[in-house]
Image 1 (cartoon, rainbow, N blue to C red):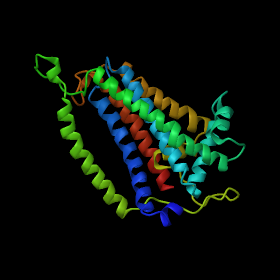
Image 2 (cartoon, rainbow, N blue to C red):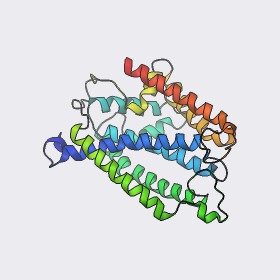
Image 3 (cartoon, rainbow, N blue to C red):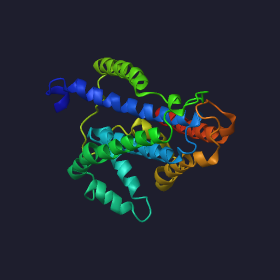
Image 4 (cartoon, rainbow, N blue to C red):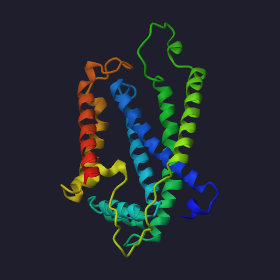
Length: 279
């Protein structure tokens, strides 16, 4: 509330931060889908696929830590559930919980630690990962697109000038759209977090609603640990499950197993998310 009501343009800055984070998750997910459906995960890009998948997981944790920093009643519930799921991890669960929370129960120590992870720890990790991901992209062959008849392979790559000519106008349009959206739709904020009182609203952030729905059907270990890890494992194995086919060509039939797995996982997550919203 201090940022919203006292700081000059605080509400706008907070809304920009919020909507940018949502757009980042959408962009990362769509990028992963494009990589699968254009076959850009084959050799020599297999390792970079794993780097990108690790960046997706880190981005989800980054967004969750930012969600917890709202420190309202909905964020408090999500933080309680999310940190308690850590205890379900065999052998390392209690140690991970103590490292993140810093105490037996959620309190100000947990808030300070999540702030440190969000601003420093995860930010440095994601920034380093993005730089290395882009480095591997150029090293492994540049942007994936259908092969051409160019004799000189260097001419088949997208030049830096062409990239800037495409990216700068796109970035300006996105920034303008974010400013408009942030002006019209402030970032959500519910009632204050009360540690001695159960929250009235119990909803996870939208990107973890499918896990919340699984908790209604399965034990915490399966819903919050085993199944999410299985989803990540299946995604990690996609380059080894299917041949990449013609790189840059959409929906190549040679990679139908990877495409089918991705569609099944996306459909499962979408259905579980919809069920959670309908509760």
